[in-house]
Image (tube, rainbow, N blue to C red; front, side):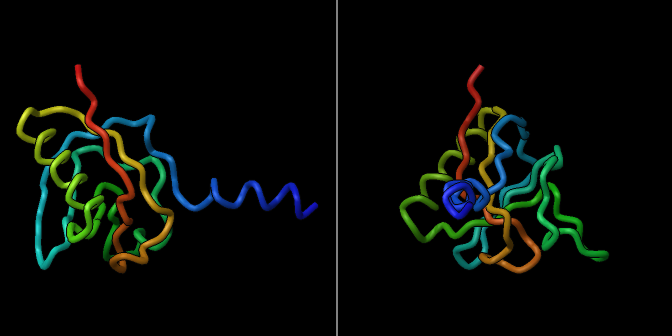
Length: 111
């Protein structure tokens, strides 16, 4: 039974929202953290981002101080400047910043 469960664990570490397209509303950079807000809400929002005061189904965060964070930031800026949709790969936790879902990857939808 452990052989069946173990291969499934890596697939559960992030929520795949890549089938949904998002349009950028805001990109906020503060203290090295990038906060992305979209017009569309995520179909998959972890419980940690759904409190009574704070329903962040359309907000993601990531740290821009790494090469991956810088690449994601550039992708977001390019998509916003050309008004292109994006696809998102998100974490299923709020470990990076409490109350906000961590953005793990972003790709620009062209045409």
